[in-house]
Image (cartoon, rainbow, N blue to C red; front, side, top):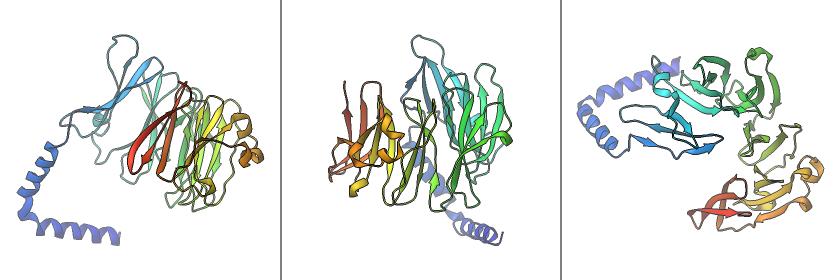
Length: 315
């Protein structure tokens, strides 16, 4: 409280000392706002029988999430209006918004305190009923292979994301199962699903090293060992796992692949002979991310400092 009181006193002093500039502050704010496209929409993305997107409206502070049928002229549906969600709260920070695999439920995480500690709510899109599912997480949400299971991450006392949990929709949080715990204090944990929806990925990372656990949601078992100084990100494509990595000292990262049947054999997966180069290392290219589609995948990065996209695989 002593530090907080000091900060409040400093803010009060600053406000008083600069009060004669209030009109100029308003003028600068309006000028900056005039250069912002307040009414805007993100590019819709197809998912199942719908296209999903979000947008902002002039005069409203928060984003609105929508969907509409993919193959006909059906009406636009508002899934979550964060402006309404924020009513009555001094702070409203939405972490993630994720629709369930069957498109019937919407899970979203929200922080009403400003301390970056989130609660997860689940909205039934048919009835619009909303229930709190999880309290006190880092905002991460990932659905399982169906609408029955959610994965999320909690933090320790230092707000380090360190535990990955499995939550059964409709069950109390006290029944949730710990899927993974990162005990090393220099590492943080995360969870996400590959674009195919088949694999759950649990990456843990420090400043210089990462470890990836890949779980087949049809037959869960972890894989990929931690090696000091080596980082990985993974994506599933067809019968391979695409791995962006800085192993072998390739600091700008390269893209390699490992057959799925090898991935779940820890000793074989760690051996170089089972890794195939997909996008050879080039010191002028910085590999940033990869996203897969049915018949190809797209690699994003920079070449000679300029943003680039490479379409790879069969077309």
